[in-house]
Amino acid sequence: MQLKTKKQKWLRTFASENEKQINSMGKSRQQLRSAPAAPQAKDVKDPESETARLQAEVKHAQLRADAYNEMINVAEAKFNIPIRKKVGAKR
Picture 1 (cartoon, rainbow, N blue to C red):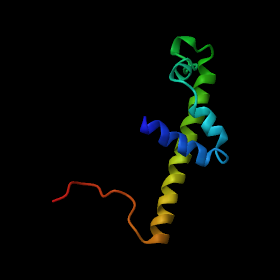
Picture 2: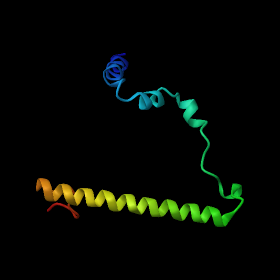
Picture 3: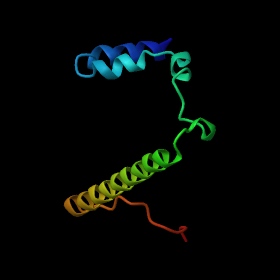
Picture 4: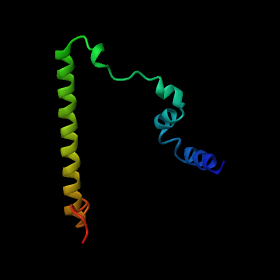
């Protein structure tokens, strides 16, 4: 019960700023489950266009990863704090 009231308080506080996000939060789990899934291999009519679409997605994901890495580099340089986790076990 307390969780619901905290959520309601949060919604009242930020409702004016985030109407679109709040509307999407109201969707029930059933509505989210009924959303169309990605096409299965047997549903693909044109494999070449599907390949091109997937390559574009991979390119977009790589650009996004590069942008995140650059943001971390800039933040580490600007604030002089380590953000990335150190590799290897502690001794």
